[in-house]
Image (tube, rainbow, N blue to C red; front, side, top):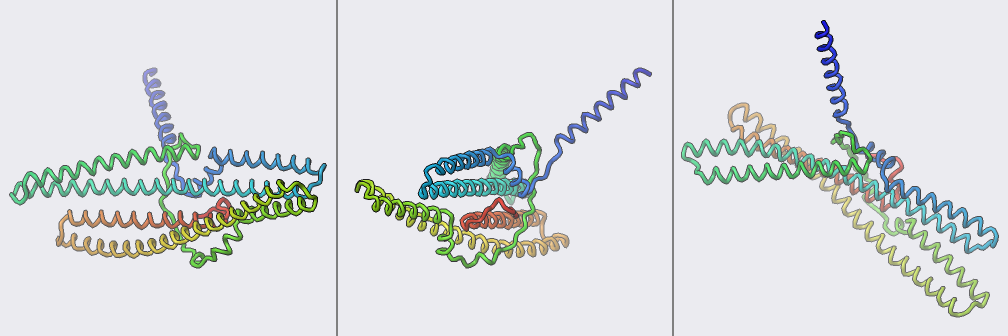
Length: 353
């Protein structure tokens, strides 16, 4: 009897251990919105940027209190400018981190597709090797043909293993950034899209003039202009006035330079966005044609009109075209995000993909 009780206890322990293993190894699905949420919550760079801007706001409050004693209008403007710069820098860094993690997410999905394609290629190449060996036995092919095909198969296997290693490495880095090192995750592959037609025509000049960076440099120019006027009224030493005028000229040149850079970046990104839209449409049409062709080949295979190797080749082409179409969706979203960033949008607010 004791022996039976012992066996039951052992079995219960084994079942419990197995259940714990299943739970611990269970895949957690993560989509892009969840990725962004985890980034905001756990990313060290996000936290550092937030603490730094909080400290800067405290410094600005101290500056305001100190300025009450001297009541300097110029100092008041400088304090306001300091706050606007801190806010703009924080938003800029936040947007860059969101674009960065989106690139990582899509990069992993692309590697996953490469893995799937290579696995399909291995099946196809093995079937092709069998076919060549059969033809070699009948005298239609020779040993060199077999050797060449074996070499081709081996290269694809090695390539597949390298892609798998790259994927594991990138996934670990991705999890580390999000602060979920211990979790077993699976990225959701379904990414929907809707083309934003409002972005077809963009008034570059207006957008650049409304950019926060340009507004800030305009404020700096105003402050320096006021300082020069005050210095001239008070008849302050000519050296100081000349220095202030030089600083004003520097700021004006910096404004021109920044305007050109922002306009150029905006034009370039707008071009890349439109290119991504066109590529998306092209890939959609291409996938549609490949699907129709594959459907016809399947019908022919069922009727015995083509060989299994031909059907495998068609399946491989379809898989590649599906991957190309989905990658074009990722590129569209990424270029849309980058364009919105340059348009001055806060990507962290209502981040939807």
